Image 1 (cartoon, protein in one colour):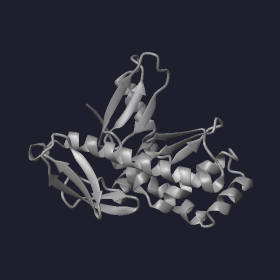
Image 2 (image 1 turned 135 degrees about the horizontal axis):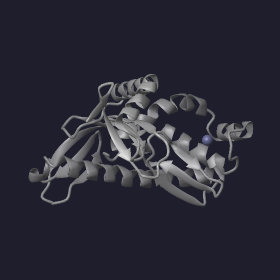
Image 3 (image 1 turned 90 degrees about the vertical axis):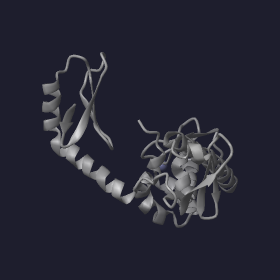
Length: 239
Ligand SMILES: [Zn+2]
């Protein structure tokens, strides 16, 4: 195994790949290349990009401190609509793992025998967040569509790592379902922002005026937006 700056280097080779690409990830550096490129060429390439790699590794470290990954342990806290929900195991007779939000708790109903199967619990947790998120977001989109008179042709849900949403010229709106971790005010802003793109597919003055006419305080949220995007990253499927 090759290491660079103390991080394992994962080399992914595809015959038709023409370029060398580096992806800085949480647990490794991933190099995308073809069959012909030799290891010492890869090392030379990494060396030439050392400053850039170090900068990105540092950003990841800061993010991990700022948004620590919650664990599957009683008392661990999970973000939910801008609040903290405390994780709690509860005994269940069913074979299936189930989740519920009850007051300040995120309850995981699971049979005693399954409490240690963290992969399955994690999988169900992600599913639970996604299902709840889609319901919540759909309701808010329809609320704001009625307020603004702007209706998308299609509403999709995705989970990109660093984007909140997007709007296409076909009037398809795509929302990041990990938004469910954020405060209702932030969620509403993202929705109004994308709905306003149905009228102005740009960030022109007219666009911002339209956003402001529906949400006069939008600038306050716009300021914290970018920092908050990593809050939901614990919901990414492990690679
Ligand atoms: Zn925009």
